[in-house]
Image 1 (tube, rainbow, N blue to C red):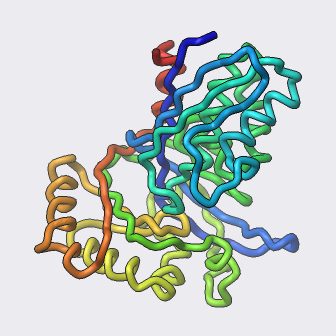
Image 2: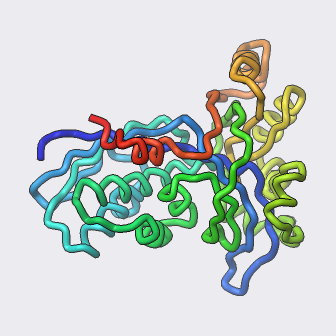
Amino acid sequence: MGHITSWPSPAKLNLFLYVNGRRKDGYHELQTLFQFLDYADRLDIEVTEKGSIVITPDISGVPMQDNLIYKAAKLLQDNYHISLGAHIHLYKILPMGGGLGGGSSNAATVLVALNQLWNIGLSEDKLAQIGKQLGADVPVFVRGFSAFAEGVGEKLQPVMPQEKWYLVVKPKISVSTKDIFTHPDLTRNTPKRSVHALLQAPYENDCEKIVRSLHSEVDKVLSWLVEYAPSRLTGTGACVFSEFDTREEADSVCKLLLSNKGLQNKTKDLTGFVAKGLNQSPLKQALLNNKSPIY
């Protein structure tokens, strides 16, 4: 008790995303490819003898009961009758609502960390099963390996795509995932293909056309980026990304984009960062290398 451990909570990209159909329950059948980034939030966790779960700082507009960090901790605490508590402090650098999976990643890191810190001893499979209750993307963060996902995103198959360098750009807008998946013009009949075929084909995102039509800021950024490198939407956005073979190329385009000579003078409040794609997440690396917890 009393010591603080630090845990990474990385971003992900959807390198491709195809919508294959709509189920009777309203959810969509998808095929998507997840890859992690070496760009992460940090969660500092202190185990306490009191049973309370304290999350800091407050997230504006998100009641504590809806905070995925809190919900993940309470799921473990309640289901496994844990008398200990935790103070969890989030150092947030991932943009919210950008399609980078920040909330899901935070929840997964809490599950992995508290499973260890509270000595619960759950298997990765069990943690992933619990994570699914919090969101479709949580299991991939729990498992920590790049994955081809099918169904509603819950059927995961480890894969090893190229680890490229990415420029990730966030226009200052919010995209509603519900609005995209309920849009009448969304492509919902992309034929299912084998993972081998998909990995060999050019990567695309079926949601991109709708997001670009609804949000001119996304359209402007992608139109600019595609002149320099292959560029796509991640998830339902609002973040977009370009892929490069070297960090130097990505940094160069990032500097130009955010300069007054680039797109920044035409589109207000753009933010961006450069990160390396990783087929093993920073959280998984820390666990496998016995470097977690990080004091």
